[in-house]
Length: 291
Image (cartoon, rainbow, N blue to C red):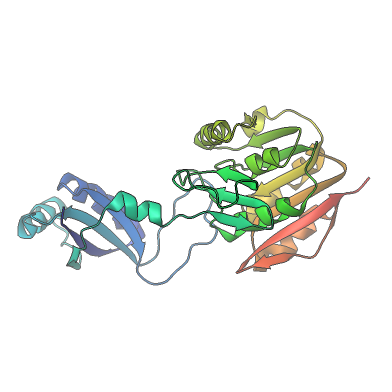
């Protein structure tokens, strides 16, 4: 099936409304794109910020009467004018196959692999996590996740109690379980992330306990993993100190290089912190709980 797309110039304040109107006009899909090379590194919790210059891209069947779409949109927007736009033909593709082809098995360290379900693990005797891209953050493609997985690959996790705080897809919790942890607890503020973690744990035949933060049991773990954001990491420092036993390892990521000193300072009251490990503009901080 052939497609065309309308690409509208918009703003963060207008993009959602324009998206809704285009859906009413019959768009098969509407997406937002950065129109000014402006990365958004750390949004406020619960927010979904857009770029200062945002493109709203609406996909339609190639047989669509484009004049009719613009006329409908003009009526809906009155007295405002239709934003500047352009129309492009979209190459006919097998979109499911195109999406799947973007994801391949990825190796972290020596023995740890993340494999989509439609690929056979390249090394059947490795520690293979079967994980498909989904709604919850964390499939190994982001530098912060890779930093944590590389640490896990080299760490002694066997028979340890591990907490994955801010679990997302459960990728770190599942890696810990497959690497021999005796008990793994996954915590997230988003119930959908906990559902994704349980589904991925079942696929990988491991047991993961999942909790919302207020329901997480008070215990002392051997390893605490937290791949979230610098702001929440700073807020949670005292809580993490309570959840870790003497000598425990703490692994923190989701931190930009410019934020490293502030995060490290928050944890130095309880942990001996190592030098940061950098991947692209992101870092990983490791600490050991003092007695």
